[in-house]
Amino acid sequence: MPVSVKSPFKRRSFLHRILFSAASSAVGKPNPEIKSTAAAPSSSSAANFRKVIADIADGWHSDIAVDVINTSVDLAGKQMTSHFDEFPHALFASRHNSYAPWLKDKRLDAYFSAIHPPYLRGVRKDPNKNGTIVDIYRCWTIWQVVTQLAKVEGDLIEVGAFRGGTSALIAHALSITKQSNHLFICDTFRGVVKAGEYDDMYRGGEHSETTIQAVTNIVASFLPTESFSIEAGVFPEETGQFVSGRRFKFAHLDVDVYQGTKDSANFLWSHFSPGGVMVFDDYGLYGTEGVTRAVEEFAAEHTDAMMIYNFNGQAMAFKGLNTS
Ligand SMILES: C[S@@+](CC[C@H](N)C(=O)[O-])C[C@H]1O[C@@H](n2cnc3c(N)ncnc32)[C@H](O)[C@@H]1O
Image (cartoon, rainbow, N blue to C red):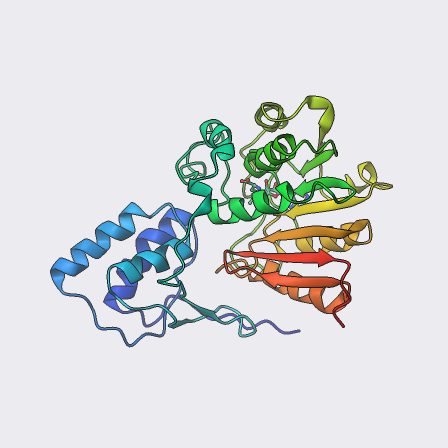
């Protein structure tokens, strides 16, 4: 299918330049254009707005949307120009949905003290920091899913570990809920691979600043070393052999690009137990439309997968319900 790519850099208003220049430079993303009729703020509100954006500059677009609403600059719901016509984007966040249950779950304290808090920021910039580049909202999804899978048969796998932040979260969830299943942790340890025409933010080689030892150390602080293994290489071509013959109840796919997501999901789904859950990171995020495309193709091809989009930048496939 032909891909239409639009320039995000045209026709940006003053407000939009403020909004996205700080945030985009911090996260290394292209600046999106927003189709908005909102008026430019006064100079004092513009200064305040700059401060808000600077404060959250290490965050992602969902954080930005929340702060935009809080500063009364109402961009929520406004459509953004997408790079791919098939995947429209709009700023959204609900004023009424602010419950943050991770703040009261004391079981997470040990995790947050091992992984750089708060909101796990700064990891991209400082290779010496333990951590994850997955935000707290998505971490909370992973935590909820894994802690509730105790009664389902099967092992667990993460494809795309980087410095092991979400691997450690899965390990901690297993340990807390006394699940003795094996955790496979897969990464190339040379960064993102298989970036292609559907991936506008990734070119290949990103997130290579990690080591097997660093991931081993952080995961081993939550789980005995015999309960997990680290498989280095491209999944599934180079490391799929290590998981063949296994049944799975959980997978966290976080490889950032179209082809890697598609190959990993297709390889693993036939090994999934009924009741198992596959979590796709980056679904719906601005700049990772390759993942969104791969997930939507996966959903169309697998009628035994019930799909949920949680609006945090994740999709989930629940195995076992015939949805056709
Ligand atoms: C966004 S990072 C993962 C972030 C991580 N989950 C965290 O908690 O911060 C993506 C990772 O996927 C890895 N990766 C990409 N494609 C892969 C593939 N086909 N097989 C194995 N690892 C892959 C990259 O090396 C990179 O470390």
